Amino acid sequence: MDNIAKISEIPNFGKKVVTVSDREILLINVKGTIYAVENECPHQGSPLNAAIVKDSYISCPRHGYRFNLVDGMCTEHPECILATFPVKLSGDDVSVDLG
Ligand code: FES
Image 1 (cartoon, protein in one colour):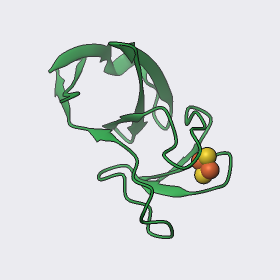
Image 2 (image 1 turned 90 degrees about the vertical axis):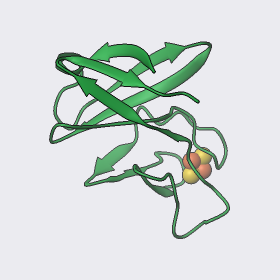
Image 3 (image 1 turned 180 degrees about the vertical axis):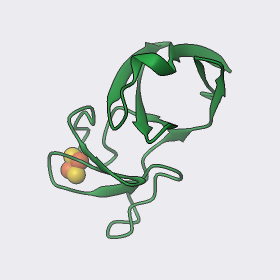
Image 4 (image 1 turned 30 degrees about the vertical axis):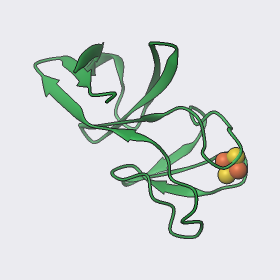
């Protein structure tokens, strides 16, 4: 697991983009739960840092595909799966397993 951010850097309902090994990872804070996803939509590659987050879903700003933050699935377009990564919190540290 790579320690890539501090929880205090990600406001509630806010996001933070971190570059790890040339990959952009988007961290999202939903009421204290931190999610980590690829900052690139699997549909046509739009960055997701401007996406709308509601509950445990993120909606791409380009065509509105909606992805589950836990497993990356898109119910309306199951062929598009957003890469998600396991997150571990320790104190204020956020670690992500990029596989
Ligand atoms: S690029 Fe994200 S829905 Fe099309």
